[in-house]
Amino acid sequence: MPNMSQVKVTIPEQDPKVRAHNFEEVTLGYTKEMAMEEAARCLNCKNMPCVSGCPVNVRIPEFIAQIREGNFEGAYEIIHSTNGLPAVCGRVCPQERQCESKCVRGIKGEPVGIGRLERFAADTHMQEGKSEITRPQPNGHKVAVVGGGPSGLTCAGDLAQLGYAVTVFEAFHTAGGVLMYGIPEFRLPKTIVQKEIENLKALGVNIMTNMVIGKVLSIDELMADGYEAVFVGSGAGLPRFMGIEGEGLAGVCSANEYLTRINLMKGYKEGYDTPVLHSKAVAVVGGGNVAMDAARSALRMGAEHVYIIYRRGEEEMPARREEVHHAKQEGVEFLNLNNPVKLLGDENGRVRAAVVQRMELGEPDASGRRSPVPVEGSEYELAVDTVIMAIGTSPNPLIRTTTQGLEANKRGCLIVDEDNMTTKQGVYAGGDAVTGAATVILAMGAGKAAAKSIDAYIQGK
Image (tube, rainbow, N blue to C red; front, side, top):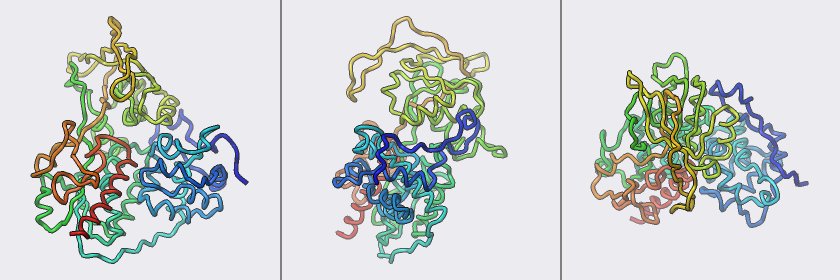
């Protein structure tokens, strides 16, 4: 019998007052009984609208049906047939704007908890499932992947499944990209990321770390070394700043740097020599998921007051509703319709306050959102000792400026055709390197599409 409840089965979480002071995972996941109860809410629609909302086309009703029947390993195998990182996606995908937004159950209530069920199936497989991975027969061709983030790992995994010898060249000392340096431990435990990466290695993917392509080697050198195609999934790690007075003060940094120090370099753990700003009052500028991650991390690093400063209203915030909800629960203070216009320093050159101007919403801009307009004479000082800029990132120009024939648009994003090939023959790209900062699952979708195109290109030569 279908479960006709209009609300999702509640997922257990740490108490907000407790979790605001630790880096352990916030949501604890479904039990088997909870997962089967939530799976029973799926109507198994014949036209499967949820699948159309998934960038990697996970066969959603099929895997949910397996969970409903108690076949958890079968559910995992269905997911894994199109999604190489299910434990990751179940935690960080914006399901409310993708698969769950298409769910029929969402018309008169809450949609089925697709992300929660995907996470359950992946976690159960890690704990109880089979671990044997069979390497495909080599096909005699080799491909280079630049960047070990979501798009690069997905492309590498799909190509390895087809028998390609794939080498991933990763700039950092460990693979994972934004999954390792950007998303905090309390949202995505790093052991889960590394387990997914170990599965790729078992498939035969070779991962070389500390390889900054454009410095250590160029793309042209890779192709001269026998790689028949190159996929660029180097992300968008170059942070943007506002260009306001005082941004050069001590205590002002990008969210990219702040989160990298905490997440990848284990700055939150005792015994690690990673310098991190330990602050009393923190202003995080921005309204996306990265801003939420930085604000919630600052609380856990001991800040007494953490402010989100965003120039639009809460409804216009691009962050996931769940992340905004969790941040509020934990004590982050939201200053919507506000914008910093200047940063003030003390006698030691450290930031001591942000001059903030109130805003109001005017006419819609090119994106369809109403444009923020300053309110004259509304400036005030907000006492802070740290300011974290989380207003977006763009691709690092290193690769395109060291590769002949590789063109980018005015935002620094690589130009690709409908097959994900760049303006250089045999070089493909996807993810944030092409779109600018976006979601993990969209990057994965691009990596999957590029792998298919690379296979067609090499086999067609």
